[in-house]
Amino acid sequence: MSDLSIKDHPVLGPAPVRRRVTVYYEGRPVEAAEGETVASALTRAGIKVFRTTEKTGEPRGLYCGMGRCSDCMMVVDGEPNVRTCVTPVRDGMRVEIQHGLA
Amino acid sequence: MELLEREIVVIGAGPAGLCAAIEARRTGAEVMLVDENSRPGGQLFKQIHKFFGSSEHHAGTRGYDIASELCRQADSMGTEMWLDTVAYGIFPEGVGLVKNGENYIVKAKKIIVAAGGSEDPAAFKGSTLPGVITAGAAQTLANVDRVLPGKKIVVLGSGNVGLIAAYQLMQGGAEIMAVVEKKDHIGGYGVHAAKLRRAGVPILTESVVTEAVGKDSVEAVTISAADAEGRPVPGSERTIEADTLCIAVGMSPLTELLWQAGAKFSYVQELGGFVPLHDEHMMTTLDGLYAAGDVTGIEEAPIAMEEGNIAGISAACACGHIGPDAAAWLCAAAQQRIRSLESGSFGDNRWAARHRLLDSMPRKE
Amino acid sequence: MKEGIAYSGVPSEEELAACPGVPSRARMARGAVAYIECVQCIPCNPCQQACPQGAITVGTPMTNMPVLDENKCVGCGRCVSKCSGLAITVINKACGGGLATLDFPYEYLPLPKVGDTVEAADRLGQAVCPARVLAVRSDGGDEGTRVIRIEFPLDEADRVRTIRRLKPEV
Image 1 (cartoon, each protein chain N blue to C red):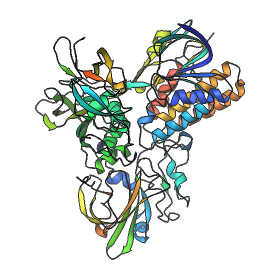
Image 2: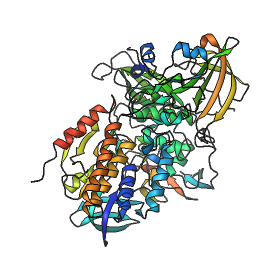
Image 3: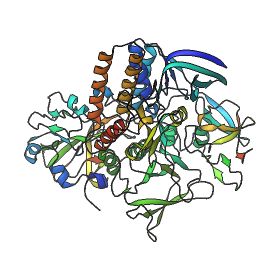
Image 4: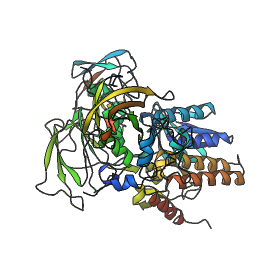
């Protein structure tokens, strides 16, 4: 687990042990905790670019975290426009940067 | 598509919706409680700090424990909970719901909309860069999924949301480089700001963010002094290293369902923008349609709970489950508690705004 | 920049002097007493119920600033972990030996250990002097808010409000 993981917390206590699963970001394996969102797993791995815009190809990433803004949308298991901030990880899930409208 | 019939449908299972459900169930009314998330509790479940208010509002209890307690109560009282369910419209035929890809229209005697609020955006050069996130998103990452959005964080906005989020991110191990505030004073409670100052966090008033700098994500944040109108003063820019910029510049009520249903609105600055007109029973200009919580004006959880109480009791009374005298007594007690919460320099103007709103409610002939 | 908690997050001398939760210098000189640094009217009153001696009063409306009855207060410190705003400490200027102690709320990791030397800090988070950790406790089963007691030179007692956070062990 990387630097960004909160392993112990003054109020929440030690992080609960959760089953590890693997999601694939652009073909690269990324370790995730069962039950967490795709966005959280990618953020923990230091991944920030989730998609690029249609006209100018600018990078976009997690913004609202509640499924409202569409900036976190990625292609998940071949399906575009998946809001990764409200989608739980699944072992073997394939996650790709969504370029434009896919 | 399936057609259903229910007595009271509550949309939104945050503190207002949960309290409405609990009070309505207490009278024996049937309640269906709907929420688009997979867990109820609204914003409470990611709040790890101890709440304010009084013991009736669970003061001194951490947000996620308040959420658990309210959920437990609603559940144990037999509330019909529909989670992962989107309420997409309120029609003459009923409330439109989608759950697991299935469409439902629920004909309800009374509907209570407790949809909450959402964070306002801020626009400046680089504001779309990955690494710019809302304070709420940062709290969900840190307090629910135990991951920091970054290690060096600038927070834009010094209302309670920004101050609390900054503190929580520090508790998670991040460094808060600065809290940036446009006005000459801090928006939130002094005690929240004092915690940050004791931890050495600079609170930069009369300042604005002019740029989030970086190629594919935030690498630095440029901050300028702000004039009395909140505009950047040229030549006053300085750039500080940061990998995350948290936006906490305000919230607005999530009122789409009420607009779509045809309720009448008023623009009230103190409450966060357009809010639905309602009477003292929290009923909108549409008969049988109630609203409670942040959707009626951005305030705090204890007030959302009291408005939920009033809406739940009033809806149940209109269905005949509790007599009007008993309902009036309970609602008056809740109004008293709201008055107590909406006093002092932080609350007086919202109490005044609440009354202007009540006065502008069209009277029934 | 204007002075005061609403402008900087640091209460001004005037705000502290006018605050009904702040004990008198005479009372502080006699021994351990609560120091309630709650200088704004906000809707909040758990401190009232927290005190077993009934020394804290908020009353109605609950936005009143808490009033400390410094003669009823015995400095037990039950209130320290109960304040949602982390605004209460217990200060003891009568320990003798030119020393003072402060009980303050702390919600960070890592926690210091009893016997450690730490950096006592002021309201701006600046280091004031070294301090020795005498106690680290959690009251009433609330693990989240620890109460730490530090000992330091008496002449810094008006400045010291907390400690500088410890670096995580690598």
